[in-house]
Structure formats: C-alpha cells, structure tokens
Length: 153
Image 1 (cartoon, one colour):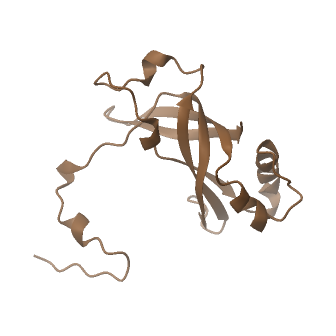
Image 2 (image 1 turned 30 degrees about the vertical axis):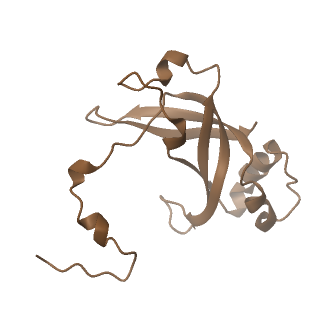
C-alpha cells in the first residue's frame, strides 16, 4: 500500500472509507426560498483566479408559496430537510463590480456608504430571499442546486 503524505489537512480517516458509503447531496426543487446568510469567507473567483471574492453560506429556512408543497418531498415521500441543502453565494470584489455589492447591501438594509471591511461581516445572519435553480446531472441520477439571485427579505 502506498503511503500518503501531505502538508495540508489530515484526510487519513476519510481515506479509510469506501466511497460507496457516501451520501448523495440533498437538493431541493427550483424556486424562491426564505434563507439566512451564514458564515462568510474570502476566496478567489473559480473562473478567474486573479479576482478576489467574498463567499457567504446560504442556509434555506423555508420555501415560499412559489414552490409547490408537493415538490418539497423527496423520492421516499419524506419532506426534504432544507437545512441540509448546501448553497453559497459568491460576490467578486473588483472596482467594476462593486455596484453589485452596493445593491445587495442596500437590499439587506445596510448602509452602503460604510467600507466593505465593515459591511461584509455585518451581512452575516441577515434574512434573505434566495432564488434557487435545479439542474439534473448528465446521467440524471442527481439534481444540483445553484443560486440565481439573493436579496434582502
């Protein structure tokens, strides 16, 4: 057996697991949901690594009336646990895209005349409306969710 060495995180326990034990991600039907902005982190744009981003976890709390109640049940008929749907919203931090953050912070009721270093953490915990899309995987086995739009609730 080859020895795995790393200077990063310790994946020893994960490497001992069989991939067949992995649970498929929980997904929800497309529509608009009540949600809360979770923790925030900084990163790089996944398509253009020279662009810095702020990333918020988005935690769904309830579906709006726009999502048919019968669609909120999984294949087994049990209600979908929206708290297990993993979503994130990424905003680029560049001079030519600051207007997007301005509009977002205004929709949250925050004062966009404050510096970003204050606004970004202030947004954590804010109530939002999240427009979620749903797309089937190429093989049709999974449905993946993405965020189309988020605004203050």
